[in-house]
Amino acid sequence: MKKILLTGLALMLSFGLYAQKTYIHAGKLVDVKNKKILSEQTIVVEADKIISVNPGFQSGGSKDSTIDLKDKTVMPGLMDMHVHIEGETSPTQYVDGFRNNEADIAFRSIHFAEKTIMAGFTTVRDLGGSGVNIALRNAINSGKVIGPRIYTAGKSIAPTGGHADPTNGVRRDLMRDPGPDEGVINGPYEARKAVRQQVKFGADLIKVTATGGVLSVARDGSAPQFAQDELDAVVQTAADFGIMVAAHAHGDEGMQRAIKAGVTSIEHGTMMSEETMDMMKEKGTWLVPTITAGMSAAAFAEIPGYYPAVVAEKAKRIGAQIQETFGKAYKKGVKIAFGTDAGVFAHGDNYREFIYMTEVGMPNLEAIQSATITNAIFLGIEDKLGSIEPGKLADIIAVDGDPEQDIKVMKDVVFVMKEGKVVKK
Image 1 (cartoon, rainbow, N blue to C red):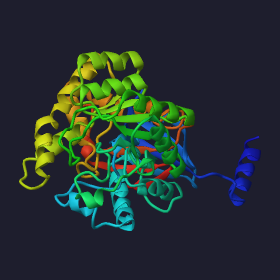
Image 2: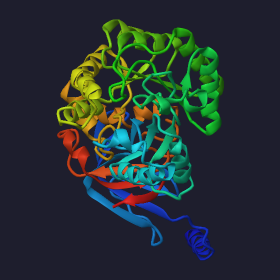
Image 3: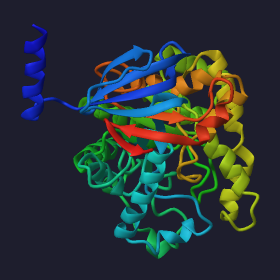
């Protein structure tokens, strides 16, 4: 019998029918579901999937390969639920829009995508750009570009003069009157058209700016910007397409309107009241805290001339509040999805969010959990991603050191695999 099996294996090898496997020897493995670290595990990968996870260090056959991570801590690929992959903060960002063509934005975004995946983030949610983010997603999916798996909102939706109105702050002859095609709406009918238009362009989800923002060239950063019927129309139309709605919101009233409408997530949540936290718990609304963006904006605002004066004033006043609000919301039991707002700060520095989260009470492994299996649940893809288990896609990263003891080790990701292909080693 043994001879028959060996002969069969030899025939499979000779005809190329034997699928080569990769054996990953993990000195430590983060079990993100149970928030614990396992020692000396072997992850077996075939093609793009994990086929087994076994205790001890095991070896394959002569045709198989082995990756030695015995002195590393291994975990699932990280997920960031709030990035802007098309751009990055700069003292010239407010004039770059008059200089850069769509092609310039596209080539620059390739660089940011690579920085993101090299930092261990194999999945991201892009929450608003010019539409280049849709093309970038497609280029990554087809293997033309190296980068994370992208779920994108395309262009954010705002009312006239709202946070995502692309003509804010320009002289009047350049303002025009942008409409639903450009993500600017007034009234529920235009709200429906704007959602349908973004879906037509290829968006995976919808993003609305439910309140003013910090970095837009507009006076107020917290007042509500949509009437209730407009938000209701956005969420209802998105639901017809089976997609979620993310609501940028700093002010409390705008959050409450968005929650009543049924948005999936509140982004930032800076001035959130306890009443709003209770509403979120009742409705199952998620908070994507983006603490790093708030802390970064507040720091940049101290540099003379970095932001326009109206932006700098808002950044100094409300930027750093986000961390305090996150701490309160977490302790109150609001559902947390890891997200950073990368682009407001340098892409690749997404790890800083782990530090800010743990500074106000979230345990280290729970912070990592929020960026892995929790975010997979948030996206509805927990059957495919979010943990290192048989049957899931092989998105795997590794760091030096022990993140349970020192969360700062998340800064230096030394190994990245996405769908079974090694991206960084």
